[in-house]
Image (cartoon, rainbow, N blue to C red):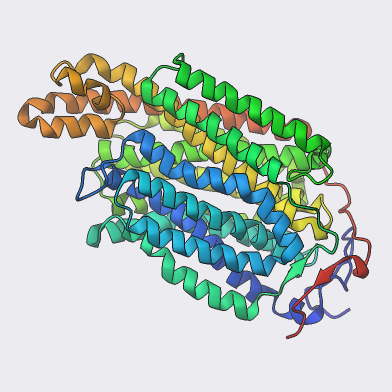
Length: 539
């Protein structure tokens, strides 16, 4: 066989004829175009992180958003995204992944434009939900198309590049956001998505092939409603508990418990439904379920940490949005360097060892935030970011490969949906739970120093460091006594939250060590060319 990159030697279940030659020849160009969609989704979230402090400021600079509103601006996107991923993946399998990808990009671009001109925190939360709708149709289709244009032996490399672009976007987002915020209003961090989406739509229409499952399942509207309702109730209760600093309030615990009950009903229904949105049968495979758990837990930790780190660099250390973005460069460089090469370590040591080591390093990196104080050398933060990026690069690619390779190729859309759903749900719960933990600890620490604040405003001033510093600024010279207590309270809350994040990541390391197989089983094969339809084979 000629050395054309299609060798299937020693690759279980692979076939040299799975991918049409015309598509195989342009597979790297297709991957490059698909990375546009990945870039725009991840770029948006990382840009929002660096813009949160600006959005929290009163109009006309920002929207005057509270910490709970900022959490909802993140989670309205995430909850819609996660709740619709199963259906979006199934629609891609049913209608064609290229079609739903183009639809998702268009909706995401429209939601970005509407978010840019939001006139209130409520509007921003709503339009972020529209962006989540678009994102739900983008990511499953992207990964499913990759699985259908690359042979099994090249999929780890392609997914490694896919994960590496996540690292690039993590750094490019805050830097881009910082540059935009220096020169334009806060809405520019959303408007920047529009030209990227437009260019991506044209390129995808011209070069990306279509593919679908010849025997897709049916839609499951009951499952979709149950999943969204359960997640919204659970996250609402958690965020409200952090906002009040009291998880015993009826509004808090009833909605949280209600969310758990609805999610339990969702799992029960899916297990008995003949056309489930979530095929719980996937989770009978250790390789699949342990990989999904690892990705969910690492994003739980990561999103919780990235939510508060911007307030450390900007509110406590006094850096600008652009400087805060530049501080993330080591994390992105590490991901870009190591993610495409993670497969080499997997080949040598096995996915279990690599994922376990990566999760353990993630946990230790988060615990390393205990070293950060008001005047700690920036090199400490940079080393921690580099370690975080290195660790993430050795968790996401092998875990994603194990998830996708445990399913037949024609089920790539639904498998990708499960992968991305647990990543997003993990991130949403991380923001909600760890954000509420930080808010509760901060409130307990700072409330004893708020006697100089008028009684009617003390509750709002205690919600976050930005709220306290805002109250201090309004009080003029008399309010300066609040600055140091606010910084100290935030640092203590950050340390507690970082330890909690690290503990969750270490739990993920234990799960990977115990449940991931040392060597992945043979990849499932399809039933032959007649069971798989790949459109767009022409050059």
